[in-house]
Length: 227
Ligand SMILES: Cc1ncc(COP(=O)(O)OP(=O)(O)O)c(N)n1
Ligand SMILES: Cc1ncsc1CCOP(=O)(O)O
Ligand SMILES: [Mg+2]
Image (cartoon, rainbow, N blue to C red; front, side, top):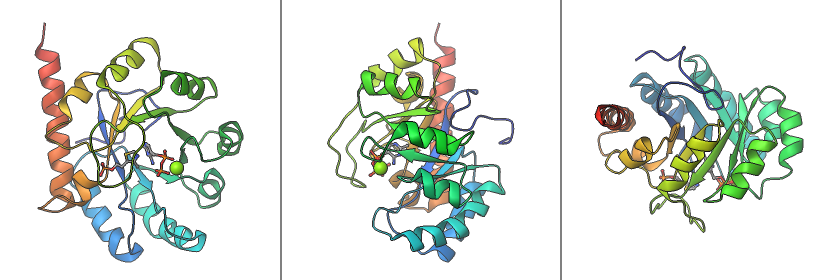
């Protein structure tokens, strides 16, 4: 599947695309190989490095090992939680939550870089994020997840509403799998962000990417066939 002419988070593009978030812990050299295999298995718009328990040096080392794997394939590489470190390490941007510092300052710091903001299940937070210039808003969790203890949930209708009134792309996250993603795609999610569906796939990450791509394509085809 072609990649380079398609959308990255923050660009509007055709249909819905896959957004990979890394596992919570990884060994950079070994994971670089897994990541390469996953990215070579199908269409991926974006990779987010999310290492909640790693210190700054470990995050830098992981960036150094993984960023080229994504960027050499024209896949955007984002850092979770830290806009400053994202800029310093040459990432394409940062994903920030509601507790991850000053979003307006991050917007300034990132310049043309990608800024994604967690908006949980909230129209209000999403409008605020859109107003300050976020390149995408992230809604979730849509389904139960074992990757993170979540306090906020989002409904499928939120995606539909957002797509009708706003231009800023929407990322859906939280417990998304090939088996449950169809309603999110049909509701207009621009990107589906996943951890477990790819990295914990029983046949390996490449099979996880192929499975997600196939499920997205099937949901889009189904949507297009409806009168
Ligand atoms: C694409 C995407 N959406 C949401 C999140 C969650 O961000 P946040 O609320 O800051 O929680 P942590 O990831 O920091 O635990 C995300 N990382 N990516
Ligand atoms: C980081 C994050 N934010 C909300 S749910 C979630 C975890 C997503 O992981 P999974 O795809 O395994 O449910
Ligand atoms: Mg965060």
